[in-house]
Image (tube, rainbow, N blue to C red):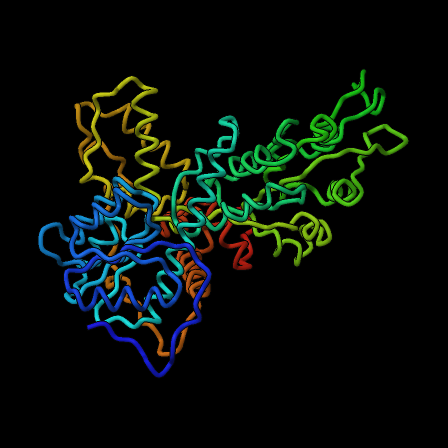
Length: 473
């Protein structure tokens, strides 16, 4: 049975060209679904089974397929797998009257957007459909952006289709059209520089220079001259004029990585660049105008640094005109198989091992690891496996120990949820505090206990306002 609330009336009819294919072997349900969706403005076609659905898909484009799980002939799950292989851009929502956890997990792993149990409320179904169509729109916009970008931008390396990543890329696509400053936050290895390059190469400045400078990798006393340059005689050893990075990429984009490492005294000059479009070289008597777009990135929680006086608050707000965050890989679990496949194909080509096979049965080991080193760690692990594997097929023994190690099950942690709502951030903060207390403030040991890198632990400590111990700073 399909259940809807007559008393609530119809949803307002929307202006939409979205096409939906409804697949169900029960004629009455199929008809009710079609009528209800058409009343809400969707263009709906119905099919009685998987075979007819595939025939419809071969003739006309669709944005979404709503299919029953159990049908004679081609099942809903088989139909889902065919759609994922042959029509990758179509979202699929599964319906079933025989719901089990195993069915739900299998459907989601096969690529279903969502899984609903019959009888389903029309309000709930419409909400899920709208979200699925919005996801399709984001994926299409990102795909178009990727096609438009020059290959040198590196945008094709931002792999994945998770909702959190697509949302960030959607913001980046729109930000690229402007010259506004951008602040990218994210952990090490999440692809901040690749995103900055993508923004530049899809902007009106793409014909001009893109220059990157790591503010944390250059000694403080040299950073000012590296950024702004100097005049001959400005200091001992300045035997000729030097052009700084800002001047060198005039008309283009300057990417400042690890912006949180810039000393406070230099932040004043950076603020002048952002506000006035001016710089003053060391040894110069007059400022000079420059036309540069700034894209900054940080692994630190810059807003908290500004609140605590470790970063200029006025500069923070000037940089964060368009803030965006690249999610860590632990929040993008559905992207891990895609990343493994891409890096695998690159790796066997690079190391000339085309015969080496990675069994699909091992992918679950990659997916259950939380990848504290993010995408960079995935790439390094894949390369290590390719280089060190002895046989024609990778075995569990060829995997690094972090992938083979069993994770503790939830019950063994003995969590007791309170009756009132809780904050996930507060839970994470408490786990960090307890881990630090267990190891007497030793960040290295606490990080190992929490299965994090020390750098990631420090990042999360800063995010939660936890102070570093002075002897480990």
